[in-house]
Structure formats: structure tokens, C-alpha cells
Length: 275
Image (cartoon, rainbow, N blue to C red; front, side):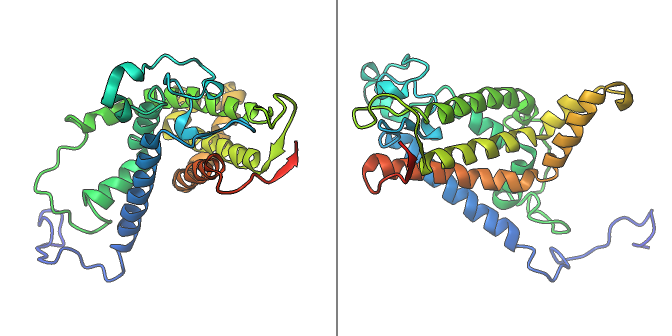
């Protein structure tokens, strides 16, 4: 009777009949996300070693730097977040407080990351054909998960922040400080790392499901909209690699920040090609 449409589900006492290592992907995801969050949290609140004056390298974790404690040369969009007047609380506010919350929300509400941390941390469910331990399921209809529906608006914010990161990469070609003679064009390994990070961030942002929907949504005939159709095809290609780009950009963000931190701390010198 359990095989018929009216028989209901089979009464299986085991959590799953899968014999493969179904637990391995969520375990790796949990370890990777935990390690990245730990590193990013440390760096965001370290409030030092984020800018290399000589080459105008600014880490994306501190962009835009809007605190009154920011290095003046790193504050491309002004300093309007008070630091001294906030006392101890100032140490709990990131220098890039106007951008980091939106970037965090963009990633948290991303369709792929939802799958990743739902499975890795909430076991909801941990894998296909594996029963979850939760007795009830309300979906994304209650707070805080209902905020997932705002993903499109966080995507708009991510576009603006990607533009700022692009400006930072361009500005990094301008030599600065006393050693940099205060001007001229420069090119070093740091510039290459910054550009790789920016390009991949644009690719990840463009691969977003919301971006694909915006580009090709509400169209009944692609043939009547050849430009949007062409863009939709390209975005759809990137969308097929959304998971890969989600992980790669976590890596490039950490690598870019670590490289600039090391330069600012004096651990090593930048490999220069020009200037």
C-alpha cells in the first residue's frame, strides 16, 4: 500500500537510506563559512592595517571608509561617522559601516547561501533525501526569514558598492604618499589582486538570480527585445556558475584584504611593475 498514491509515505525508521557521504558537503560548507566569518569579523573590527598610502591600496573590508578615524587619503567619500564622541562603542562600529551591512544582507539572502547555511547550520534539511530534525516548518514567512524577500533591494545596494570597489581599484593606480611622489601611474601585484577581486565580485553580483529576473523578467517575446535577450543569455550563463562564484569571491575578498593588511603592517613589499 505504501507504493500507491493513497498509501502515503513509507514508514522508514532510518533518517535516510543513503549510503554515500551525504554529510560531507554540509560539513565542509559549515567549516568554510565559519572560518571566513571569523576572519572577516576580526579584520572589520581590528580598525588598522587597511590602507597602503604609498600605493593607495584600500581593502574592500574598509571601503568606503567613512569614520572620522579613517586615514584621510582612504576617505574618498568623506568622513561623517563620528569616532571620538562615541567612546568605547566606536570600537564596535566598522569604519565601512554604510556598506558592510548591505553586503552582509546581500550575501545572507542570496539563494545559494540560503541553501548552504540552511543545510550546514540548521540541517534544514542537511541533504537531499535526509530527514531534518525539525518538527515544524514555516518556510520564509516569519521574522527573521521573511527578510529573505528583500534580496532584490540588497542587490541594488550591492551594485552601488561594486561601483565603489571599482573606483578603489582605479584609484589604486595613482601613486600616493611621500614615497610615491604624490602622483603618477603605478602598477603592482596589489593592483592585479584588486582588479581580480573586483571583476569576480561583478561576476558574482551579475550572476544573482534577482539580476537574471530583472534583465529578462516581464517579457512575453524575447524576439521583440533583442538587447535584453542578449543580456539575459549572458547573465544566465553566469547564473549557472553562481555557487562557484559565491565561494570564489569569499576567497578573493579574504586574499585581497590579507595582502593589503600585510603590506600595511610591513610584513612584505609589493611586487612592482611600474612605479
